[in-house]
Image 1: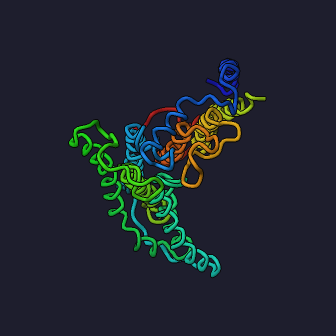
Image 2 (image 1 turned 45 degrees about the vertical axis):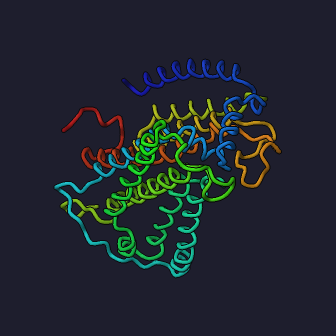
Image 3 (image 1 turned 90 degrees about the vertical axis):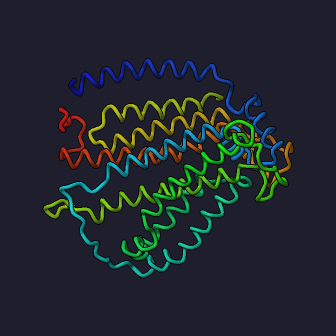
Length: 247
Length: 115
């Protein structure tokens, strides 16, 4: 199809879709209204299980099974990326050369690095209490490690980040989530039902039953996944060369 | 205008589709897909908003003292942001392989399948 013909088809389809979507929007309950039946029930269920962060309760208690699905997508896309970005037969591995880093950049990166890693772990640990949780904290902790690449060089990063270990960690975290679910089955209830552990005191670290456990598993999974993904892309950019020396 | 936030989501989705269809670079196409995806976040968060509502987190407010926004759609959005980012990484890895094998990232030049 030529570009012109494609644009005409796109304009027709887009106009039809836009008309349908606008008609659907006009029929939606008004923005900012007070009618939120699912939201109200989710808040009630979360408070009855003493989880202060309702969103963590929705993710790791009320919709824990859906989160297992989301986690599988994450895991599968990491596996796919690792397979796609492997070193092929016509490529060889070059040695990355250390590069000069401006002193303020180096200083700032090395000061911020421990703070950033710690905040990531804090966000994961307090997922059931305050805004945050495994998904966000995992990304913060994993990207914080890469400040070492900005502040020092690639070889320093490789020393603190054995990729093999993080790949194992990714798989372990995914299975920890499933095992926590299976423990509920062995305990005599449904898969991933939050009935196994005591709910604890509201607004303390150990509240919410299995929510903190699942939250920690997701935090580890996301952190390991992001580290593995970035490692593969950095490998391509820094180390892997084609036979003729081109990167 | 109580429908404006929904219309913003529609607009973001359509502009993303336009970019996808007219893209001359696969990396640009992956970016457009992310734009389409963010339309769903805007729609979900707009559906869950409540006038004067605050975050549904009870670590520092008393339950029942203030209206809160819908936590269900927030949870949906939050998981999708992270999962969407890793899927984008997978797509970019595919683009890298396409560029290595075919020497181009223009979708119009990728006519035939090659082994």
